[in-house]
Length: 145
Image (cartoon, rainbow, N blue to C red; front, top):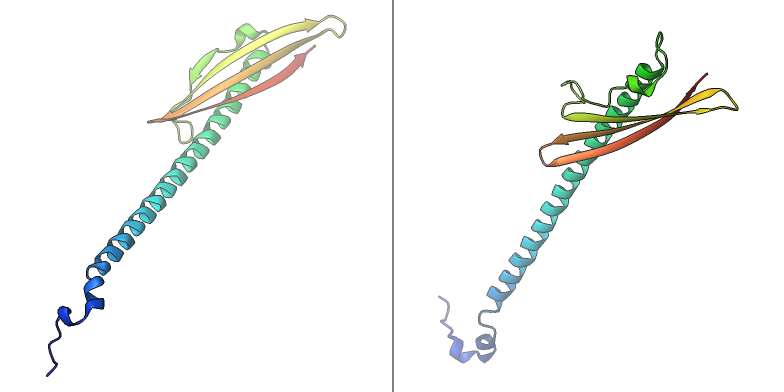
């Protein structure tokens, strides 16, 4: 029904033999690199989100440490002193604070002219989960007459 044509009669077709294979390989390689780039961006985004969440947990744990230390140092019924502050402890194993620990420092000094005792409380919290470790610090100054 159709006449057979051979490549020998068409020199133009002879020169183009195999060019479709090269184009197909090029497209496959470009798409593979595009796919790898999308996977990398997605992975970086997930990692960034984890650091953000654990950063917020560490910041809240550091705030909790400062509040606890302020209550221990300046709480009702105690003579204010930095020696009353617990220097370090692990947060309870509750949602949001699991894997967090706190280190506290407290410095006190008196100002003779005003009669006040000043306290500087610094709380450094570290929250970890697997390979992720995030640290945040909070410092508070307080005074007592």
